Image 1 (cartoon, rainbow, N blue to C red):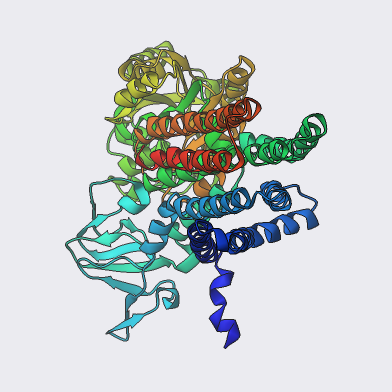
Image 2 (cartoon, helix red, strand yellow):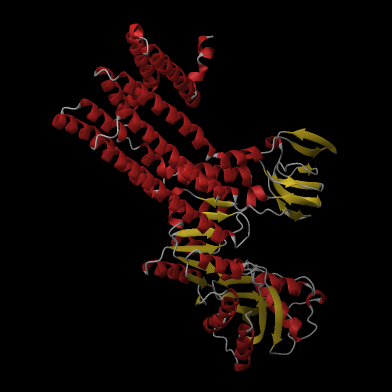
Length: 635
């Protein structure tokens, strides 16, 4: 019974509120009784009681800090209040402890608002799931859904699992995951994510991610970790505070020894509290990361947020970043008569030279995972099933080589042909030059050591690419470079459309890595944007690695410094703008804290600031710092 009655003591915010109110009532009572001469002693006793009520909790926290060998702000206040009581300054003691407790309560309450973004994410977690079992609709807890089960999502319902749409059509609000305000149309084959909402249709979804294995759960986990991670500025300030706080005690002792003025020494203890300085960075980091999460931008932690605010150069991959990453075959140029693939039956018979060329190229590319392989294989599949190669080898950044039915076939760059000792006729070089000047990726096809043709592949430029570059330059990033494995004419054609003037073409993955390192050696703070997997070495070498379209991709969420949940280029300048706003906010807060302490110190030395007034200004500066950080929630 007693334990339940005093359970509120375990909640710091509730305890501070109750103690603040009780201390305030005692102060008011003391002031009223103090007007009556006969009750002046009682008034003093009530004032001491008010100091004890509010100061007891402060003293306990100071004691806990000392047990951990830490000189805390609470110790400064405890010494000051105790000293004030000893010298008979009861009002000062009560006022200092009351204001400190009131500030601590308001600080905790206001600070919690900066974590609202995480709270909103947690609110998205679905509470029920409707699954089909034995032909019946059964309502279960989302955590009880079995992978592979069919989940029914009705109009207006929140999707309970990650999965793939089996049937149905609906507009799904994915803003909580991707930050995109417009709903996405979902039909059979499309992925859906837990926590998103079907607005107007019925969906049958095959569950693939449940509970902690959903994109929403990974986002929440990432935001929780990121908000706790300390930024370099925060670590510096905490190291500074560990020396600063004992130094204030020493300064107060010296002030007493020199002036013999106890009140001056105690006032120095109060105004020297580094509360606003200590909280200046973490409150901005929490608000900045929370705001970014609301906009579909996952930032790994305070260190990465602070570094992103200093980015001076940006390196971009071309395929899949500036372009849609869905290349299509546009040109088939046969240099030799039709060559029927060896071992072919009716299913792979070649009808003409171009078809023959395409099918030989498709046989070689059938074993490749490269984005350019898909359009070749898909185009050849229109003429019938494409056989698998008997042997297959990849030459990163150059192409592929394969064998089939006793023949060799290679698809790739002139470099690959040189490695394989395949002669490339002038006619093929002319076609290569023409296709690349049109902004297309051109590859050579060789069979049994002879060049038989050229294929042209084009990828569609993203509509938002030029606007992204314009916004990046508007944020102050003047150096924007394209790093691509494509040849220079193709890369330059894309760069001209986008507005990028620094192009590094024909790069192998390790050369992209070296180029990023070179940019850093030149003094730039470099961000690299890629898909999080193919550009992994360059992403890791950059100061900040940014992965796009991370929703549903574990690797991108876990490895990228900044993961953009939506496949939206405009999120890149937005992430950098928000990082810079956070960095400015941190600097503003540090300035507020330092100027407050400097102003109060000057006031004390001039005899214009006393203990209670100093504590009032100090607590006001703490709240000002928090309110300033909360502006980031609307950035």
